[in-house]
Every structure is written in C-alpha cells, then in structure tokens.
Length: 296
Image (cartoon, helix red, strand yellow):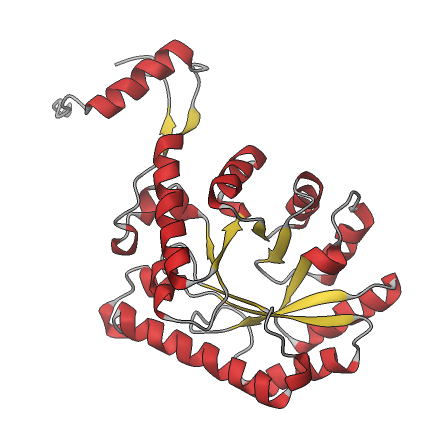
C-alpha cells in the first residue's frame, strides 16, 4: 500500500534555491521571495499601467511586510497604498509618512476613531487618507466623528460594479451620500470612487459571460455612477478625484478604458498558486514556502 516514488529531478532553478537555503537559510519553514522574479512582475504591471495612462495602488494586505512594500513602491515609482485594517493603517501612516492611502473596505466608525487616537507623525490624514464608505448610514456616523474631532474626512464611495458583496448599487443611494457630503463641506470631502472587479479575470463559469463581456458590464455600471455624479453634483466633481478600480486578476483589462485613474494590484506581484490565471500568464511565481526535509 506504500506509494511508489514518482519524484523526478527538479529544475536547475530549484536546485540553486535549495543550495542557497542549505547554506544560508534559517533551517526552519520560511516564505521565500525571489526578488529577480518580483522585479519581472513589477515591470509587467508598470508597462500595463503606463499603457493605460493610470496610476498603481499597492494592496498592502497582499504584501504585508514594510520592507517588501517599500521595495515594490520604489521600483514601481508609486506612493499609493490600499489598507484594510486599522492597526495596519496606523502602521502605514507612521512607516510611510508620504503615502497616499485609500481604505480597501469600509471600517466601523469605531475603527476610524481608534486610528485618530493612535495616530502620530507627519502623515496628514486630511490630505493623504481616503475613508471608503458604502452606505448613507455609515457616512452619517463618520460625519459625527469628523464633527467631534473638528476635522475634515476625505470620503471615497464604494461602488458595486458586479461583485455584489458591498458598495452602492443605485443612483438614489449615491445621491443621498453625495448630498450629505455637499451639505457638510467643513467636515466631509468627496474624494472619488472605488469599483473592485477581480471576478472579471478569475475564470468565473462561462454561463456568467466571457471576461470581456463581464468587463464591459463593469465599466457600464462605473460610467453610469460617474455620469450621475457629474450631472447632479457638479460642484463636487474635480479632475483629480481618485477613480480606483481593478484587482490583480483584472488589472490588464483596464488598458482598454480611460475612465478610471488608477488600478489596485497586490497578489499578482508574487503570483502564488491560486493566482495561476490566464489573465496573469506573463507573470512568474515569485513566492514559495520552503521547509527543511528532516526525514525521507
């Protein structure tokens, strides 16, 4: 019943990694990142971003090490981060005082309050931080926080562009939120939109539509929200708004459109096994779990 040995000699690349780990490794399980391969992936992303005329925002939760984030940000020439977690947000603000940070999900207002209680350093939230919000009720809570703190919060509105796991899905709700922002300019500032669409490039079942068809639906929804805002709330609209979109599986498709101003990418830069997707065929695996073999 014992399985046969079906192993075979591995490639020269893995042979070299093995030799390096034996000579210099800590002799315990490690996550190993190949910086040469990471450089390749960064360059692939930046070529796409430049072709599309956009900016790159690094998804911090997918690259959760300050040194790694700093390395990628330097090579990519970006200071834009996306944060998802209040303790990480405070850490980012301290370690990257020149960063432009957009929240990647709406946080309870208590989390925002904790951020301000713990914040210290040169990072200026009133200029460099955008809170992502998804409902008029949550916006009302953040307004009360801003009034209590005597500050102004930059508000980015989450759009449901087809994923259906959060964000506003109709103009009536969007109008309520923009109206509240317009009515309180001393405490709220409209900063833009975020429309997350990774399902476009994740290889979803064909019955839901081809990647191109799904992408066109995403941009139709996004365009609809933008047109409504420009027409009904012209005084809030500016050319420098953050119109965020994409995700690692879908960022390449946004070369086709001129509406969004930036794409978010994180995991694609390392390409672990679950991101071995057709949309990332030019990327190479750059992260591995390695552990010493003690018995065989």
